[in-house]
Image: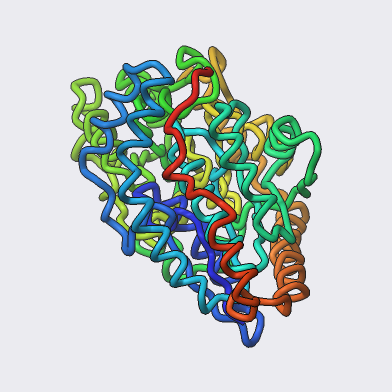
Length: 430
């Protein structure tokens, strides 16, 4: 059986590559299953994201929603035509398709809706089963995004799961008529079992090192599902103050990023700031090199005794490796993850996410540690979730394939859906 998995494996935000690797490992454990992962953006390797991404996002952020959707649609039009041909060819030899995991059902100015809608068209034409696995679902979609995402249910859907209760509530609000998804853990929770021990931080001394995962505030504000003013730890001064507090508490500090160039550049601004000049060149502060592969990110996180992060998969990977962690609010998905693993006490948002409170929270997290029984239960549930999804696909993969249809049925299938990238690019709604 051949499964073709779609997500954003080769994003510069290596959290996406991390969860893609975990998916591949878990799916491949069953005999006679071949897994191929395809990046929804058409990337084929790590490090191929545009260097102008931050500038493009900054420009988009200055435009009203109507104009942003138009710009994104026009920018993607020709690329989606190429991807549609490539995906049709890949699916010709596939027995089933998996979409997930990751925050794929979000209306980021139609970027994901256009890609997912195009994929759903391809799956439906091929007549093969589709599983949507442990995805994130954002709360606000435009009418056009809703129309594009609705194609999922038209494409032979046999399994629908989301990664937390917030995503489930959002999906049901978007599609009250169903299907109703189940909640399954994020595949990133398999990090500890998907990467070999020598990839989990052996290149560093982990003794009393607090990793501070730095995220560019422009990215946080652009993708946040709340007011940007509510985002904690978003200036060089805030980070510098946190570092100084951690050092005074007796910790060593390692600044790092999830791999995105803009995040690493912001980390460098913090590291070279005037406020931190006395700590540079000492054992008390260092800046990790930008990771370019998921195993490098796993190594950085695994080399710490605790981390503080906005990035969801930095926190998920830390939990997977039983490393205490503190999460920062900017998007409901982070808060929802902390709630799902009963660690709400170590999540801070808004005015509570001050350097003083974060320094206190990480010390509390280190003292408490990770509950081993709860941890093992979560990991087991993650494996069980993947197995349940595989079972649903195996049960349906014997259905009639596109190549076995009558010519009349095949012609109807080919023309039953207008490609997502040919539809009107925008609608007059918020």
